[in-house]
Image: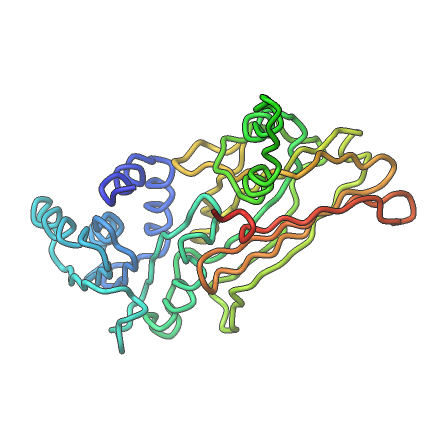
Length: 309
């Protein structure tokens, strides 16, 4: 995707833009300074200046920064310093009252959000405000076959050809898809990961969590895969969500297929998700069905590393 196409999608998302404006309005007071990390076209800094910030530093490593400068001139917005560099490469940055960075992906951490915000603490004055504040990652079973049927074409190719190795690669991938509420069981979603970006402690790039549903919560349904989405707390009381029943944004949900459908009859379904963003993004999902008394019935393990071709 070209950089201008990315910016078009971001700035065409009114749900995102309005939530970020509300969050900045909640935290900015006249005279405050702002560090805008991954500034892109400068949109967030422009909002911050109009909300009373005295000065904004814009950090952007791509050539979009030149466009941001042109847009600032065109809109007569001053009080801006443009820094053409990745924020992690900036030594001894000036401290700001507010640090803002929107680097969320369809899979929340795929664009380096965690690493960016951990490093962003260097830019904050003592007692300063980091935006966003927190993230919750959620998972739910998908109990309709429509997405799996769309993706799992390999057994239907026919002509007496066996495409099992290609199927193995394809089903060890995650897919950006529109998940409908009707695709999910009444048992609901589970939070598998929570991150507080404002804390002083070290945040790990490798994160893991387990979610569980009983057969009753699944109402006996067959599970074909899992849906992932996130809820991001931008500022106190202001949350941006990619849930299937939330207002639509330019982000969508993520679908994790299963190798084979499963059904937790009189037992439980478990999925353990392990995400490692220290070098790119690696996601592993391990699915287990347990019978009465917790006895293992079946398991399958999928890994994005096995999905690379």
